[in-house]
Each structure stands twice: as C-alpha cells, then as structure tokens.
Amino acid sequence: MHGEVIAVRKLREGQGVQCREPSADFRSEEWIDNEVVGCEFEDVRHGKRLRQLLEQLSHRVGATTPWACQDWANTKAAYRFFGNERVSESNILAGHFACTRERFSASRGFPLLVLHDMTELSYRHEDTTSIGILKKIPAGHKGRAGLYTSCGILMHSSLVATRDGLPLGLAAIKFWSRDKFHGANALKRRINPARVPIEKKESIRWLENLRQSTELLADPGRCVHIGDRESDIYELFCLDQQLGTHFLARTCVDRLAGDGEHTIRDAMKQAPVRGLHRVQVRNKQGEFSTAVLEIRYQRMVVRPTTAS
Image (cartoon, rainbow, N blue to C red; front, side, top):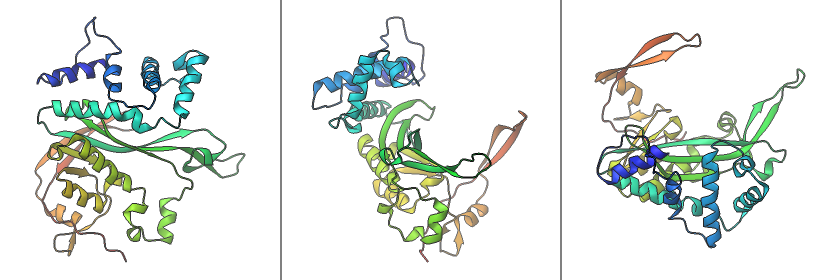
C-alpha cells in the first residue's frame, strides 16, 4: 500500500508509476487520510470510526474483527458501525471512489484497464434467510449423498489498473444476495434465458458497473473494460458502444456474425495469424512446458441472439 501511495504521488507529478520503498519519514496512515477525506456521513463520529477501523484492519490484514480491534470496546464499536442503518457502502466508499478518479486523471492520457469480476463472500450460518444463498454444494455424511447450502453475499467489483498492473482503486461495486438458488442448468430446462429481459437477470450488474465506472472516470475513450466469460452479453456490447468506451471479453456464445451465415468462430478461423505468444505452464507433477498461443483479430459485425 505504501508503494501505491508513492506511485500516486509520482503520477500527480507527471512521472512514471514504478513503485519504490517508502522513506523513513513516510507516515503509514497517510493513505487512510486520503481515502476517507471524501466520505460524507450524517454523523461526524461515523467518519472518525471508519478511519479508526481502516487503521486497525490494515495492520492485521485478513484477521477477524475482534482480533483486528484487539479489545472488546473497539470490537463492539466496530459491530455497531457495521450494523448502523445510517451507514451504507456508498457512504464508506465515496472517498475511495473520489481518490480513484483523481489517480485516474493523474495518469495523463495513458489507456487504463478496468477489471470486472465477481467475488463470493461465504459465511457459516444456520439461517440462510438472514444472509442469503450463494450456492449448493455436495456434502456427504456417513455414505449418504446430500447438498449443503452455502450462505453469503455476492460482490461485483470494477478495479482500475495500469497496463503494468498497478491498481488505482475501485470505480464501481455492487453487493447483493439471493433468497433462492437456481442452478443455471436447471433454469435452462424450464426457460430460454434469451427470453428473459436483462433487467431481471443478475447479469444486469455488468451493465450497472459499466455505467457507474464510466460516469466516475469521465473519460470513456481511455478505458478498456475486461471481463471473463460471464461478460459475453450482447446488451453489454451495445452499452459499451453507446458510452464510447472499449471492452475485452472472453467469448462464451458462438454468435452469428457478418451476414448471419457464419459465426464468430468461423470468421476467426479465416483471420490471419498476427503474432505468437508463449506462456509457461506447469502440470500437477510440477513439470513445465511452453504453450504457444496464436493471436488473431478482425473487425466484424456481431449479430444479436435470436430467441427461439
């Protein structure tokens, strides 16, 4: 974190983004002051508590709340803060989003990456209704097969980073939970997903985060949004074009392309190889080998999904 703050300082001065070790007079809590200065709470005490919590948690990354707080008084205060109805994630993250925008602007015209992905926050709890459902996983007991319901919260985040991998902060985030879990294969047996409006799918989070991050950074032409196979959503491609930004997705659906008589895969097979990229991979036995990837690219028209 120290290296990141110093890199931000160098960005502001128009220098490179290579991190270095902090000097002896660098104050370790300075990054916390920068992150919370833009937060707005109804009660000023909530802002002070957030700053104290960030300091405690940053000194013991990965620790439980009681261990990070060290004593019962601070632990109880932390839980009161988390459970306060007047405190929301938007209050907590407002300052961080402002810092992300500042660091983005300080990068002086370079294209930056916005990495989108989902994270599952899993908890042990007997009552699934109080938290939400993540998924059902196999759980056998004395030879009996069964399913165990995993509880938790889902988080879809959008992280801004330089092409060298230096994180500049979050540009968007969305939390939600499920009251029921329906496996994707089970849903496909009952309904054609293409007939369900995007607004009624969990996939809407991709569009919401794209809008939020684009609005925050206010320079769509400099952004390259990156997603995994879940981001292969036609509505997302349309929004991307509408906002004037760029998106790199891993394909999941072999859509119709061009005149509609062939697919994306057919078109890419005909595209010339533009280059080779070698990647070192290791198997389960620890043996290394080299995989050679062919790089192909081609401009094409992608057709929307036709519901049948």
